[in-house]
Image 1 (cartoon, helix red, strand yellow):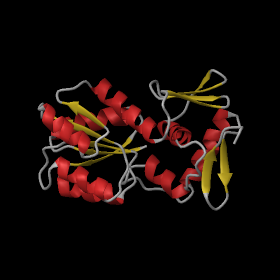
Image 2 (tube, one colour; image 1 turned 60 degrees about the vertical axis):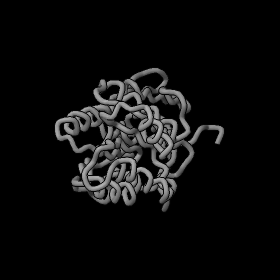
Image 3 (cartoon, one colour; image 1 turned 135 degrees about the vertical axis):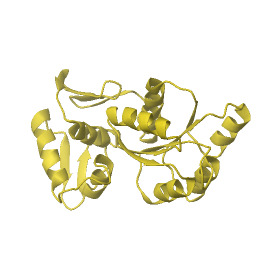
Length: 221
């Protein structure tokens, strides 16, 4: 899944970006409020980590413009401002969560996982569909309780489709969510990736909708 990190402090941005990447996310970074607003308004993100004190346009203004434009992606505000009034203002502006600095990376990752799950309609940290389970905390996929070794990209594919159970996801959407912007993508990269994952899982989980994309559905549906 693709995350936009909006943070103007270079050291903080590097640390958060590294932690999010290690947690299985593809991360884009912006340090300027105007640039961040444009990216959030034009690119498909699973979630956004947003600092408030930004050059160009402050974080609250960026958030308000996104919400006024109808953008519904979850937003976690990350800021050094400790005033509770500002925290309330951020939530009222449309933020889904608020984490003051300094913070523990483990808490940041847990909060990101939670808002991503909630935005996809998934409440529990372990998502189970048929015989396949996805543990978002451990980044582990199991089939009938047996762990399956997946590469980071393979894990992202399973995670994204399981988070969006029952919805057909286009090849373009998967490409945008699984690969960094500067990654040179082959036209059949997603198709090859799906084939590898199917072979590793050994079960009929990912279904193809010709001309539309891929979907994971429960047996009942």
